[in-house]
Length: 474
Image 1: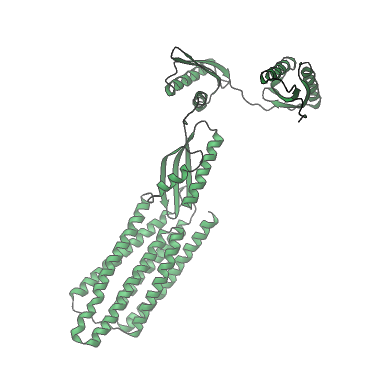
Image 2: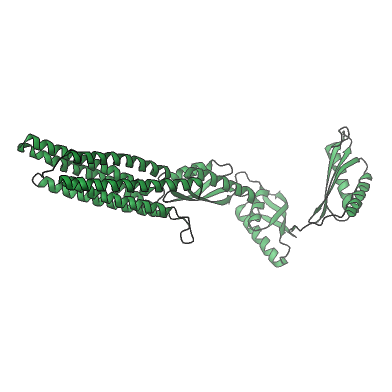
């Protein structure tokens, strides 16, 4: 887990413990004052606070369980424990609403209930309102910062307590007023029941919304609009041609993304991996905590050349092609090419693989009428042997002697001799007349290469770099 993730878990656990401690204090105060004053409303508020305590305890243990790292049985972690806790808190809110609605209807239909309103009762309800406002704001801030549904449910619970405590406070005030105004104003005592009914309906709406969100995440519903934002961000990464699939799931505060991006099939495996890594980093910054998995799908790029197309088709089958030539005769198109196959294959197996390659090329390029292939073994790199000093000196002397025999070349320098899988690669810099045409210069280089291949055994490749004689040797 990252440092930011650890910090978030500590913040969520601290918020849960604070809410448990505050609710315990409120329960003790409400029960004590309710029994002392004989106020049924305050005792009912104490019962509601017991539900708050249960919700806070559930949130505390849910946060701890959700913080456990992934394991063999839970590869996506334990984040959905928070969703389950939020669902449980929504159920507790619904139970509270049902109880408030029942009591409110009973009091509206019954004769006015005498409520003992005293200074202690008003004081404890004001304290309860203040504590609930602070807790609701604090918990909601932590919940939104670290995306904790269980803490969000707890915050909504305390927000409902603010309303219900306010109703009790109004009821206590109206009860006190009705007593002072006389018996004809006794109906004012029912105002708290009417207000409680309105509050219960508002809380019912909040709890249903919380329960719906928790259930949606338990069923892996994608957060609204997130898939579209992910698509836009991924398409902005250089090398991404298109996005074909985006799957998003939420587990507590963690977001998991599985997506498929299309890249040009002509790019190398390393380049495709770099594109996928760039997408993962960009989407990871967008979703925050969680994991992003990117699948790369190679696709044909617009304007792809014939060689690129055939090479890509061959690469998909573990083959390589070169020396591709296309011919058009009387509205017919033919291609000739060399196909490299693994050297350990038999002729029959190699011919079958090449036949499949030809069929695949015809399917993708139906305008091609015929394909002629030459089969040859694929060069398999092997560990080159290091040159002994004596052998290195002998080869350099022989190469220099051969180059001196080529008319038009002089001042050969910067001779590099390196082992290669097929022998030795030679690179040499030589001087030639500056007024030579490119065709004549190339003829000199080609002549030097042929002489070296013919007279120095073991040379695999020769590269002659010509420089005009007016320029100093580099």
